[in-house]
Image 1: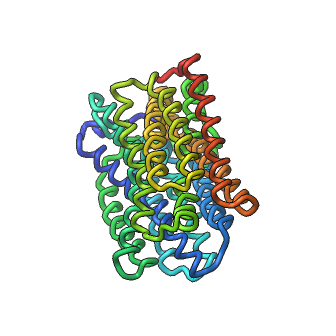
Image 2: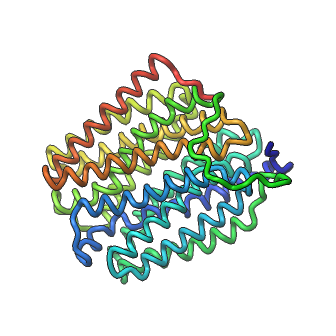
Image 3: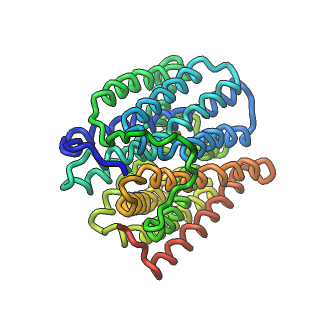
Length: 399
């Protein structure tokens, strides 16, 4: 059985530093989002290829979660965090020197591996490094670092690409600098997992959901699936819609629209505390439903302001359900399987962010980007509404 290192949870600054490392790592995964139009001009590929490049990232995430989801429970949080940041650094180098699709695919795959390791391990580390009295704040710090990092990635690259030289190089140089700093911070973090002797073998565990966690896990994971599907729309498809349908070519504006969904997610996470996780989970699903109705309306009317409103409302709902679900799963999971259980939660989320988005890319070839986006929005509406109504009738256990 794993025991946590005594005293490792006591430093108030440690969990904040771990959350900062988490955010830096996740920012690299969305850094290319506003740049896909530039890559399309440089290399020449269709909207389907854009979504396939995005899906390669999600495949990397899911593979890392399934293969190494419990490695941090065995090796410790810090070694896995360092490995994840190292993979993110290699991904940035691939983008820095890319000259065609092969390095784009390799860079996205490495970025996916990094995010897969970070998702479960960094979340567990933030929760464990916080003093017991600050557990609720640590849960917010972990989810805010995840969504905030994902939102800051396109914001950083969009503004640098629009207003600074070397649009396809400078964003990745800037991220490399941030990663070096994050590696230094991680090296100084306390370890929260005591090593076991003899050490259990490292082998793929697949989806690890202990029986006592399933009542909290299933509804939380379904809500995450719907919420991450919405995020997939904004990170993989929305930039192309802005450029091709609305004629918006300012990369900073495109980045700000994408950021609006992730920024609102962070605000939604703040609302989870006063509401309580049990109420925030279904409420978040229903707010997400309303937001996606607005997004579908924006695609129909080809209106940028309506799209931004839809992104903000949908992001608000996603943030509420995401924090409530993750907090419930983390609290219900036994200590020796916490990292693996949180990783399983993210497997479901990243299936939601990848498979439907590739479907949008394929539909776009036949129906056009606008109609494909509308169909996708309606799919998320049905998904999130069903989960929200189900949770209202049968509230999830949240720990």
